[in-house]
View 1 (spheres, one colour):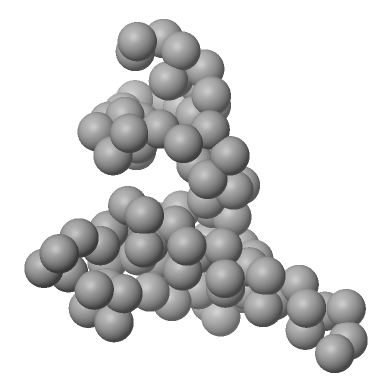
View 2 (cartoon, rainbow, N blue to C red):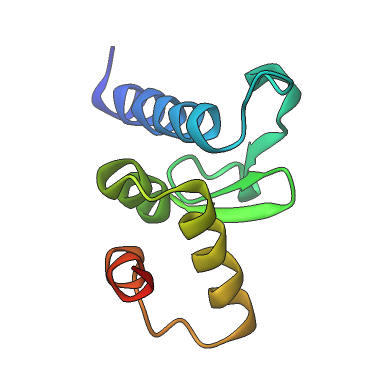
Length: 95
């Protein structure tokens, strides 16, 4: 497998892990969640249901493990206000 193909597979795997952790539960399975890359640019912005996540957001979410509430509070805070915080600092601030 070529390096670029590996990168794209890893990006897709990261998004699927993110979706599995933050969008799925007993009633909602991975296959029930809508996901695509914006403009088919793998590794850019992922559209998950009606929300948009950069690959950096996804990696940092998996790295820092916020609660579901913290993650979606962060997401909607960024939409409503200027994004003054990254996820790591937002989690610290909201504790």
